[in-house]
Amino acid sequence: IFFRFFSCRMISLRHVVGSFSRVPKGARAVTTLKETIAAQLPAKRDYIKTLQKEYGDVVLGEVTVDQCIGGARGVKCMLWETSLLDANEGIRFRGHTIPDLQKTLPSFTGPAGAGEPTPEGLIWLLLTGNIPTKEEEASLTAELHKNGDIPPEAEAVIRGLPHKTMHPMTQLKIGLLACQPESKFARAYQEGTRKTEYWDPVYDDIISVISKLPKIASLVYRCTYHDGKIVEDRGSDFSGNFCRMLGYNDPSFDELMRLYMVIHSDHEGGNASAHATRLCGSTLSDPYLAYVGGLSALAGPLHGLANQEVLRWIQELQAKFKAEGRAVTAETITEFAWDTLKSGKIIPGYGHAVLRKTDPRYTCQREFGLKHMPDDELFKIVDTIYQVMPGILTEHGKTKNPYPNVDSHSGVLLWHYGFTQYDYYTVLFGVSRAMGALSQLFWDRALGLPLERPKSLTPEWIENFAKNAKK
Image (cartoon, rainbow, N blue to C red; front, top):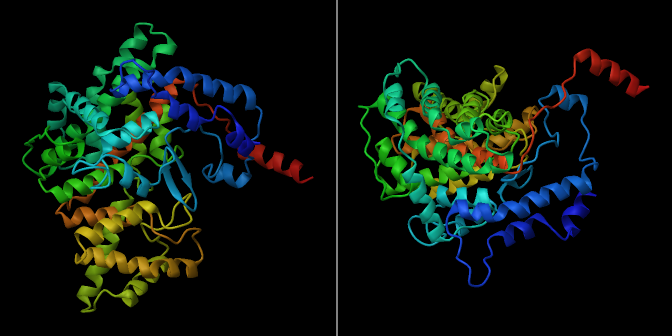
């Protein structure tokens, strides 16, 4: 039924999204992101109402005891606009694969495909379903720069934190919370704004949060590891200005940051940071508060901290064999991997809760490395690990996916450019993930989606129900 609906329905989502930006002859062209979204709202609301009205009783799947106890893996119970993850294909952003985006989204260095796609182009795509023109992308860049300043009192809070003892992710969350008094949605709600108009101040808030995060993150970085001084470059794009504030002025590093931010932006709605953002936002917490919830999830070792664990593992591997006077080869990597597994630990950067093939986010980073740093020692080690690790993990037999994920490569690429403070890497992830999580949060409020409230069960209830089902 579900397949037939999406195959045959006259008002398909692709048709609706594709028709939103058409302008009647003689009318003024829609150029800004907010205007584009406003034009989409009526048809999009009608579509979701029709979907629920006509198919509200259709069963999407069932839930097993394993899924209930095992983190709700694979339970189909969440509407998510912006991306879809396939176990074998990987992530699609509004229907586009990562290679698609590299060919079609605007590039800062030239026409689409001339360089890495820009975050601005992706934000436009996630919010509207449309690939933006270069002019539309430029208008969004200007909007992000315009909203990028943070209140002086928030900057004072960040500068006053105990940088040497407080984790950068904790500082990032505090910095964003210090900006929360600027929330337009919180003010509009207190003033009694109608539910159908929530989308307007929520849009302003998500743009504000996305815009401010690079400044907050850069203050955290410069105060924690350097002199606290920041230099901006608003003649560049979103990523280029972020790199300047961090203290980097290398076009190649700018390109890496564009790629990094695009591929870390969204991974459908079930991942912890996106889901936490959505859950908090469903209570009508404003986007500042909601995304702090997402950042708290991202700070966990099983989520955003994984890339630094990969780098630590590789460096331990290097140090061990250097001390023994042995080269890092496929054979010594295999030996070290088995030692890790036999000690009861996991191989960081391999496996994924959903994917069953090599993560395309890993693949595009590998291609970046082959282009920009083919002789880098750490890059070559990662490449050798890729050659042997799937076989090792398959033989070990305790992982459903023996292939590398996004975290296998990102830390090594950053290290190549001298970005060696790996406790900070998750902050970069946090700046990126805002684009996906908050784009969905916008549509949650624009469509009037309700408070999330799944049903929980006690172990005893599950046991009694399962016994009766067995009978």
